[in-house]
Image (tube, rainbow, N blue to C red; front, side):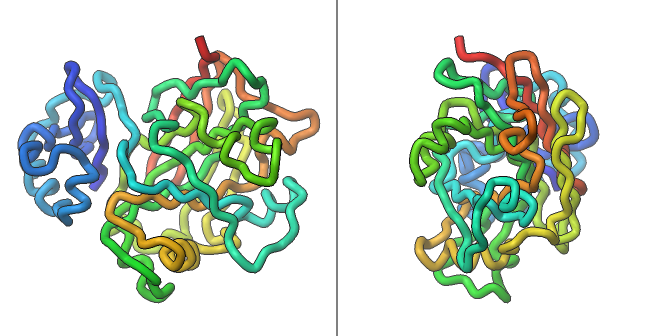
Length: 283
């Protein structure tokens, strides 16, 4: 099942994607579950599926405004330099532990919504990644059980303001500008993806392939990330772990390639979907 958050006719809602349309489940279940995070907290994805069964789409995907899949996660934990090729191109040494940083929910936009290059920088870089949505509370989750805590997967673009990211060893200033992260277009529920190591991730800029990797190449795989993150902080339903970007980022190219107004970037993950983001300069 593909579930998405969106705005239609001035109302924020969520629904199940069916073909080229979406069934508005929020209008049926919204009094109990006002948004997709509330559904996940209640463990009610089965109710969402039932509410959409046999229903005709309420709107075409081309007529809605996509929102970030989870607009209000309690935590967005980002894994950095988690593919060998990206670690090498960034000049980072090997590590015995994952590199984890935080992104704020209000830095995100949805599918087809513009990612914003701020006035203060012309070094706006793409980072295609696989996002994992946590389905239930867990603390010190064993690797062997980690996949049981996932309710779904989505595409992510961790847009990075490279010069601000490198001001210090702490990356927060380069990762949280408004409108610089994209999350969508939907969440594919975990039952649809039995083995998340068998996905292919491709990032395209203006149609040109810039990144290409398979998720079995992650340095720290998804169970390891869940185990590590859940050890230092309890993971809650609706939290998001973003698993890292492959080699091929614009910063590391010669000459560097950065996103500019008018560009279009796509993050394409097999069995998940294609997250499309036009680039806009800040007004």
